[in-house]
Length: 117
Image 1 (cartoon, rainbow, N blue to C red):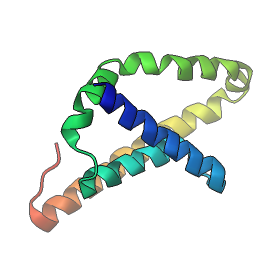
Image 2 (spheres, rainbow, N blue to C red; image 1 turned 60 degrees about the vertical axis):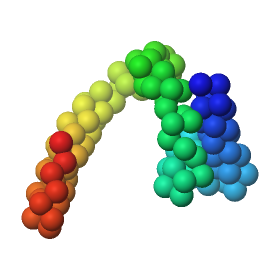
Image 3 (cartoon, one colour; image 1 turned 60 degrees about the horizontal axis):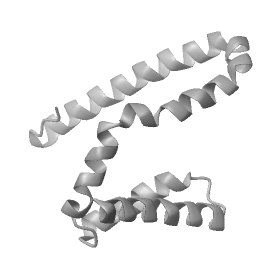
Image 4 (cartoon, one colour; image 1 turned 45 degrees about the horizontal axis):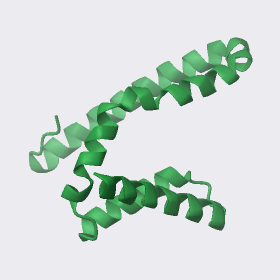
């Protein structure tokens, strides 16, 4: 499990270094996840080597959202002033995501009979 954490944290660190070093507008943790995907697809990283660490992190996912929730409270005054625009944006974006997901699923079923659950 320690090796899995080392791989995951190392890729996140590499993503942060790339994002900050190259001045990319993409967060470093997203770059790290992209590097993880590339490593898994190319076979450089074995799925079994990170499975235990990943499952432990996923089982405690709710705990990982606490810092983000606290971060939102820092902007509570902004949320109070702009609540209507935020609610409208959340509702509209939710329906757009649901529509795009449905159209994509229908397109995939038409194309090859694939079904995504």
